[in-house]
Length: 414
Image (cartoon, rainbow, N blue to C red; front, top):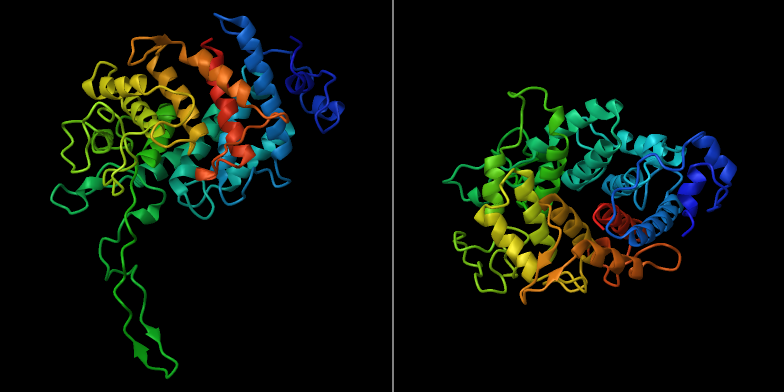
């Protein structure tokens, strides 16, 4: 198989992909064809197919970038963070070794999105955006980004819910939501409450009591934050430096898991659900265990250094093994399918699982199967999109980034 065009062009080849090859070569002069050696392969032919699919996806991501350096939306830097992680994690190492201008422009956009409070966001989704952008900055392996990451770490740590056991909100303790605004006002009559207003007659009117924002803490946001903090733990300045309350975070995870030890009324311990995870500890819709959240739960336990032999980990790993499929996000159909693939590759790679043993005893090479599935789902233009638009999965930049990053993770395992 010939070397893929996009990375060949970045390395000084003759391919063309919408901009002149000489322009790209000028951005990365004297870059070798491969910086990172190819990992040992069980199936080098499949590895080459993966590299080709990645290359085509990178081409799409290059072309989807806006003139402002971001992807998809200027108000949601997390989307750009995911794309940049995919770009600098490609298996040849060419992009990370000498980032071309379009990648530098993307990182500049992330840096410009950091707020005074240390978060990396624009108008909302502060935890999600900060966490994903932190992972992109960490993936670049640049000392230049360390001050940015340290400030972002402190921001994420400050988002963790902290409620005493006797509080009506204790169920949220240890979790993290979308924004800082998810944390309630400690005193509705404090200085943060709105000041009295003046009616048109000129007389002062008494405002309605300030209402605390509706609380929102969930497994997905908590998992993103735990991953970002885990991946940047080397930046913790000292043993006494501010850190996440990992014990409380683990307890929050337990409250989202279908186990006999979780006494919530929605918990299901039948074989179809036992060990798996749901989105949040209230589970108002009464959902059963489902795939993407169960991989997020597995990952989060790993980030919190809960051992693979711990019963909480073995319970979710067994659920994932017995419910393994690439045809859907188990329990959700096609909703969030590419996020499911993404968390699957992260979770099983972090766990170190080479194979999964299904409910019927059959062993599957999940990495090879996932790689082939994504190769077959790739569109003719090199992109990926989901048939379901839930959770933005009709956005080709987002879904292509999910797919490319997933292929990068399985590349070393086939």
